[in-house]
Image 1 (tube, helix red, strand yellow):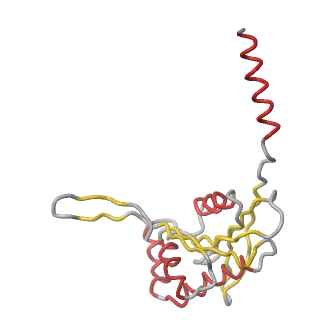
Image 2 (cartoon, one colour):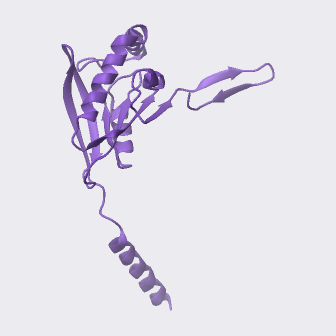
Image 3 (cartoon, one colour):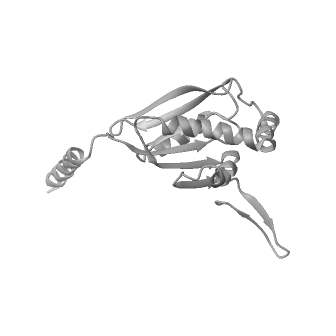
Length: 185
């Protein structure tokens, strides 16, 4: 009886392995592009096992710029079946090393809204022109700094069908209690 149970488990695992669809083949690449004379380096991720045009997502980075976390988040969304492009807002050679530099860089774009919109638009255009992307199904998400700009995108990207910000947590003070909340804006 014990051997029959082991055999059944082995058989079930074999059947599950045969029934499992082919594993996703995640492809990634850096993409050099420009906004005016400024060299930018974005990050593209997609599942190569999917054929045909598919929805595209622009992922706006946090105030720390193009980092390993930005690339990881880009890949995470791409595994869901999207072509995802993380545009470089700060510039190809600008990689903030500490909070002071992050604040300095993000302040440039927070104070100059047309520049921020133009940088995000340049990334949006790179994604829209990608031959794997269905240009009628584009979305934008953003984390922290990028989430703020994603929230404002409805004013300057009306053709984008999906927008979702991921913002930093905030602390709300109430006379009776203090709470921390996380969520979308």
